[in-house]
Structure formats: C-alpha cells, structure tokens
Image: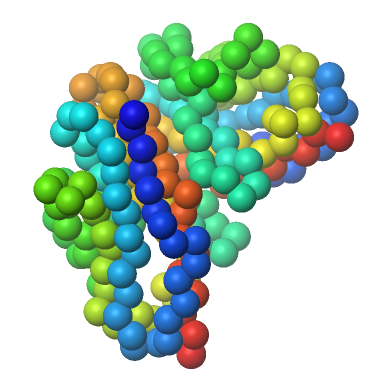
Length: 110
Length: 116
C-alpha cells in the first residue's frame, strides 16, 4: 500500500539547534516526494520537492530510495520555523493526488 | 500572487442537511482537488477533477459527495446528507499540471465543517 509515515507528532528544539524531521514512504513505483508546511493560521504551502533538489529557507531534503526516506533537515533552527510540517508523496495514477503523512509539529524554543 | 480561495471559512450544519463548499482555483489551473482533514488526523485525498469530470476519487468519496464546476471559476463540493463523521477541514487545491506530469498543488485556506 502507498503510505507516508512521519513518526514524530512533535519535535521541540532550541533556536540554533539542528533539525531533522523524519519521513518514510512506501510506494511500488517512482514517487515524487514533497514537504508542505503550515504556519499558524495559514494555508498549506509547498516547502520543497525532491525533484528540484533546492534549499528553501535553509531546509533541505534528500530522497533515499534504499531507505525509502525523505527526511527534512536544517542545520540551525529559527523561531519562525515553528509550524506543522507534512511529508507527501505523489505519482499515483494520472491525477497526481497527494498522499500525506500525519505531520510533525516543529516547535522552536527561544 | 494569485491564490486559491474557499468559502465559507466555517460552516455549521445539522446532521442530514446538505452543504456546499465553494472554491475558486487559480485561474489558469487545469486540475482541481478536494482533500479533507479530520481533527488530529492526516490530510486525505477525496477527489480530483479535470476537463469537467472526475478523474479519480477515493473510497471516502461515496454517493453522498459530488463535485461540480458550475462556471469558469467556481469548483464546489456538495455533501448531500451530512453525517457527524463528515466534520473536518476541507481543503481545495489546484495545479497547472496536465495528466502525466507533476506540478505544485496550491491549497486554499480550508473550510471547517462542523456537523451537529
């Protein structure tokens, strides 16, 4: 079955500490992986996608097909990074629907 | 920057009543989606819509649900006879992508549906 797993519901770190939000997936083909972010009282928005291999707001994520993982990393967390982060998978059927993980709430303490 | 809009932001209804949730996708987008998120759970795909017809739907999207693009701008989700378990946040999304490619999905702010 196609599935995205985010094992941590909450990750609390201090400002300046490294951050790693874990994401594992299960998919039989070649998926596209995304990280979406939802800041307080704002809409879901795309943070980054594996296919573009770029760094957004200091975040990076590398697709590891061997470990079926797409962990999100940032070397130095900022308070403004506090948000809900969702890992998502696409490539399913012709409609590119997204399959989401349950999300991880990142809380960056001052 | 253009955005997906949704109305209303919050809808309260009695069980058994019909509700219509409205979305205005980004104007040059071709694919439209509805997702829902029950409180404390993951965002789940409901349905995708392309070229004025449903292209894919999940098992959640049963006969009580329907979608429509009544004019060139609105995209609606109708629930004919709401149940308590339909209480959730409903998100609309749109993308430029034509079939076979993957493009960024842009999400609306959501409509919180509360069924009493």
